[in-house]
Length: 163
Image (cartoon, rainbow, N blue to C red; front, side, top):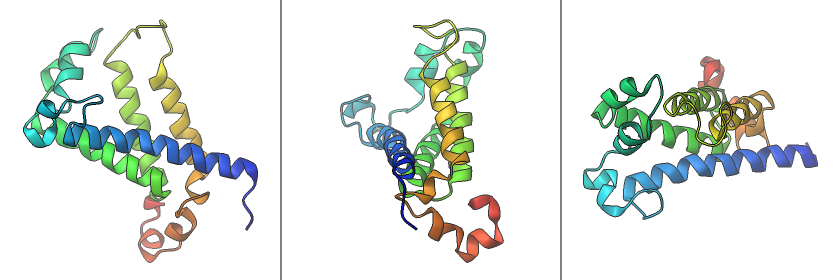
């Protein structure tokens, strides 16, 4: 099958989007000095959720987010989410799970900062939400990725939700 220009664009969008989430994982893990300093790296005992949830959360759900900020379970779920979503998008595999869980993650992040700072309704988290839905709906993993091969594996045939 020859990829059309649009299919290549879907593949490039998926890869770029995956890199955003994979990079966030790597930076929080090692503290590369971009969003996370080395002193606050997860490997150095820092919490990947404490700063955002404790200090940046606001609005009606802020008390809930502040309570769970920095707890080991939330840190692990967040980091595994970043890694899983980023890796799946980069490779084009497991797109259904990656896109649905990514959409949930960004909506949770959106609700942590209500109302958004620069617009009373819309911010990048809502745009990310729609990008996740579009990537899943248009089978973006099939373009410039391993989605087609992934769907043919026995594992995915036995457990279709892994597609």
